[in-house]
Length: 255
Image 1 (cartoon, helix red, strand yellow):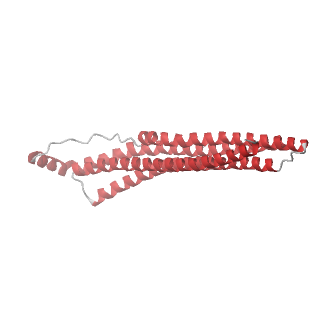
Image 2 (spheres, helix red, strand yellow):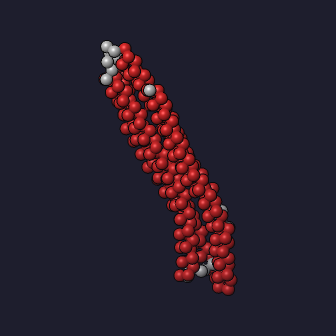
Image 3 (cartoon, helix red, strand yellow):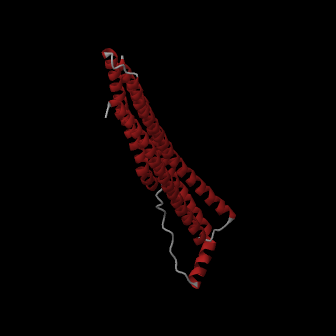
């Protein structure tokens, strides 16, 4: 097989690889988003069950308390969305840069085929110049592989770490809900006690939850979101620097 046919096959193979890689990446993205949605739903359900359980236990099912609970759940949801939004930003940024690098690899191989077509076999000087250009383009393609690998690593990092962070930040380590026996006299006794002290005790539950659980979530989550966004910016700057270096190396090689 001559060099031109070899280059043409290489060009076809990398295009086929790009198509397959895109399908795999879309599948990974779909699985990632499904996993995130399930995590969000699970965390929100835990909070709702806890707060509603406290309302029922202390017999404080009033419009005012319903509004308080809705506000807590709204803030909890906002915090979850901030974290998943930061992860989505990193994931999609890495994916787009990976796609761009693969396209640059395809372009480099296409340029190799085109350079070979322009080669004058009767001119040693021209042949040497074209061969040098093809070698530079081959190295350019290899260098873009490093960017592809780095982006894949970041995508996989998102998939592996989002569940860890969700469970660490939104750990629902609530205060134990009081356990009581079911029965007429037990329920009657509990209703009488809660009629006297239920409002105060429920207010204390909400106060402690907002002060201890929710505040800790807000502080920890803010730090994590800032860290992930900074990581995304760092990856972008790193790739831009690599692209600049690849361009300079190629230009120096073909001079």
